[in-house]
Image: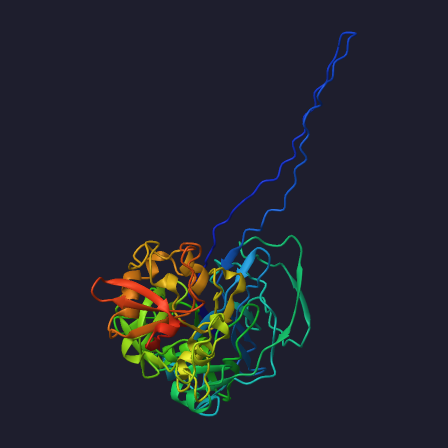
Length: 532
């Protein structure tokens, strides 16, 4: 027999905006007009039409499949997850992370007159033994593998907790050994729970090949393959990568058989859970699969997800999540950074190189190009290069986890000429308020939004702390290079060169600027957005 359970799915919705289109027609007639006619103005007849934007709903969901043909005759049992949501004009489908727990129980009975003997106690973890297998006595379970096909679920109800079970042991057997493109027609239940008026046709698809590893260490040693189930000490198998919309995991179970001619009763229990890719988190030194901190997992699994999702490791993530904005620091690739912005929803943070790791610019051998947009300078090439002489050399975590953003380096700070890249430098707009030569303390203004493209809301950036981190600690002759002199029209009367140097006047606590050429000691402090 087979028993399956699954945790309640999660649903995310975006606000809807409805627009109405109307057609208004009016007509006026003059009747019984005297013999002397006068001009008559006809009625206004507006013909209005519109094409309102579609409201979209964002869904994060998955369905656990359990295709079962018994443990003795066909002994076919396929267990896998499907991300059944697909994007459309009205639906945004999100990738998901999944995990499943396998437990089993095995009892034997030599004859009807004999008592049952418990061989494997109830709720015993079904853990891999070796080579994608579980073997013990009469029991042989094949994990992972390839060569199987599945029928996409007809139950797309986001609020349904049911697994998609197709079993030859059901009261109404519905198991089928699917072949590629084999068709099935059934009533489809939509995301909202409504059933289709007529049967809908689905066609069978291939289940991708997968491997099963007994630990994170074994998975890492094998090269960290994405198409893998990884077993952990909590008894769960974790799919190593995000399941994209409309796709399935590889097989967790491929086949299960009981090789005994005596009487027996064998049960495999499957418990599945899924989460949004932004949910795994660190709280109070513990690692969780869900954002509410109720489903604990190991640091190793957290780091596995971080690696597959292009995020920093657990230690660095915890430091970023707990940091005081503007003063908290994190060490990545042996370099210290200050957290100057954080978006907890998208799990992105803005990091600024610390003062102790600032980089000197040697203008004697490589002067700053006058009148050249920053994105075309050697400095920009340097901070974005992972070559031996580039700033990203020996910084593999930053190179892989920094997020490419649209940065505008033109003189006006407009985003029209944005350049997509990972590493940037602060702009003049990041260092001053609309009040000339003072700390920025009035929120993220238009210059910041346009010229850095960080898209951080004002409360996510501690602006006074940003200026102090940029400028404090410099000696009297030190100057920091900024990426653009864009004022976005605030100081049209005092145009600057395309790049400038900024420094903090220690005597007056004000940010000041000057042309690069007049700075005797020039430094850069790379800044970027990173996933945590």
